[in-house]
Structures are given as structure tokens and as C-alpha cells.
Image (tube, rainbow, N blue to C red; front, side, top):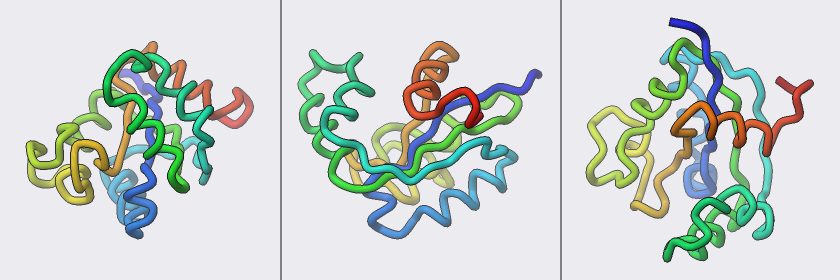
Length: 138
């Protein structure tokens, strides 16, 4: 299994609730290496650019409002099979349906405020990492 990079966000709800440290600890406990990390505050325009793939979906406005509502932490994570591993650690999008022990089950409040984001494929990870980190930062 080769080492892979993925992109992650600790979303505004988790940051505001004081869960950042606990989420970062879990990331490290699960064997990820944090290659880059930054606290950022997305403007509405930046959130719209990042989530442009969902522009036509009914939840787009609410999602971009939420993601620009407060600070979040963006991360470049590295591990063997990182994309699949991170998605498993996050759990289902809806915290009510997430398995026990996952980040969204523990820290998510709703399908809209679910604590974390993660890339779903290598192509998505490449786009998302590039959206937030310059090559030399990685």
C-alpha cells in the first residue's frame, strides 16, 4: 500500500465547539502525518469556489453560508490509503447514521454541521489540496 495524501477540514462548528485539539489528536492516533495545516476563515466567495461542484444542488447556499460562518482548520494528511482511511475515520455524512467511534458521530451535530470534510477520490484530493496549499507548503 503506497502513501497517499488527502485533504481534510475541521469545519466551523467543530472549531467553535472547541473540538479541534481532540480531532487533531485522533488524526495522529490513527497514523496520519499532518503535512500542512492552517487556520483560515473562508469568505463566501472562497467557499463557493471550493464547493463549485455542488453549485446546482439545493444545499449549496446553506453549505457555503455555513463554511464561511467562522474559522476552520484545513489540513493535508498523509498515510497509506489516506483517502479511504480518512473517510472511514470521519464516518457517514449524517452523524445520526455514523458508526460509533467516528469523528462525525462524536463531534457532528447534524447532516449540515458534521464537524469534518474529506476528499472522496484522488482527483478531488488534488484539487482540494491545491485550493488551499501551494506546492512548497506540502
